[in-house]
Length: 302
Image (tube, rainbow, N blue to C red):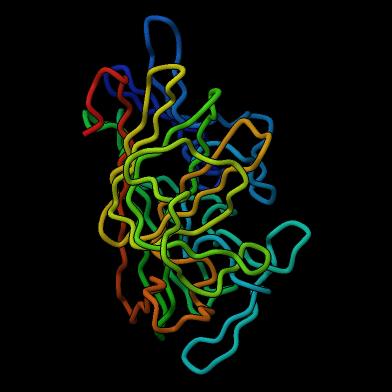
């Protein structure tokens, strides 16, 4: 049976997790004297269909992130065809986890552990995934692990897809080594040197119109909403060496997606580049973690 949404709390922090809606963190907010501050775009209760994931909250990406071009790839000498899941296009997008109901294996006041058993449909072999969502003094921490549950090696990729409110303007500070510009449908050919207008190392206003991957991420990012004097600090573990920035023009959200690999990495046209896709042997485990820490502009982000 699908699990009901779960609310976690720690101090002034709150998070809602919906196991039935792709294991998504459907809301993350602070209770403040002047009212609730939403750090993620909250997910409407009426729009929780795993076959049409709403652009809100933060969902786990497993066993791959972003797109696999034309929903096809070759691995270990075999050709595989996946279900095309990007609307109106032929690509597979965002993996299986966001389109599945997860089971609750542990639950407490400030933490929940979710599990997903995948039978290998749409992938070379079965796997199991586990996501832990925790509220603590550091903020919201999510950990995602994938275990190869089948007899043969499989490709593996992990990450998260958060939707954050624009709030009239956003400044991003983060260090990337490369950018992977798209050649078609957001699919890149490979990395190139970071141009000045996409260098966020010293902080700059986040431009609109991006659906772009960045490589060589140092695992730290600071999002600041200067009009409101608040921000959100991202801290990621070592495997999360890539970021996808999605900043659609005219929308009230943007996305900063920490991921382990480049877009379409499994079909990478730049085999010598650090695209980040992993090969997971039988019983092998791949794990990543991410912390989101709210702060006020008068408080240091680090």
